[in-house]
Amino acid sequence: MLLLERALFIVAPQDSGKSTALRSLFQDRRLSTHGVPPSSSAQKRLPEIYYISNERRLYLRLTSPHEFGETSEEFIEKTKNKMGSGRWCFAGPFQPDAFRNMPDVVASVESFIRAFEPERLRVAFLSPNRHGQEVDTFLPPRDLRKELLSIAGVEVLCMDGRERGKNGLLLADFFDFT
Image (cartoon, rainbow, N blue to C red; front, side, top):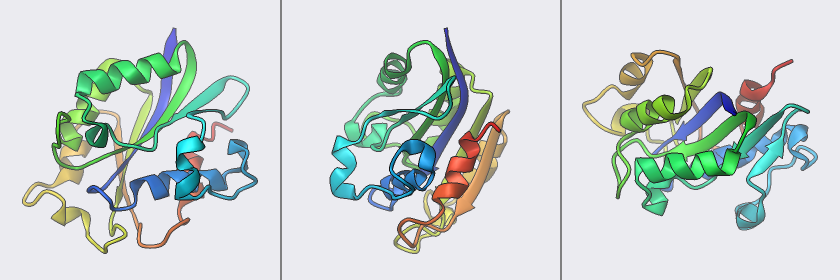
């Protein structure tokens, strides 16, 4: 049986630093890179599954389902197939707006919760993102933070994404169960 304990989504528009922020998770030595985040050129060779304790694994996805052109159902099915049974955590990117076949971040988070019922789900907006863009400009005039906070069990934070390789331990701490 699959038990999804925690899920983390990094949210920003396309080409705004989501995968860079996710790669900064490798500042945590549990991910076996001696605390050094891999470069973007190494990204395609990275494993998707990491043991973060004897009982827990992390499925790390670095490309948003929006960019792959997946539907919400395809994204969820692919995620279930990657994880299998056991205790899991998930980290991956979402775009704020609907793109190709995926809905906006609010609808995407809602469908993820319905499918997996995670114990905790955190949405981290890159705000400002690497282009200096703030969350309020992602989908004006909507207040995405407020919409997400109205969903039971969802936590929201904004983190500065203007500098590469920062905030990795802030993100990794979400997956620390000690």
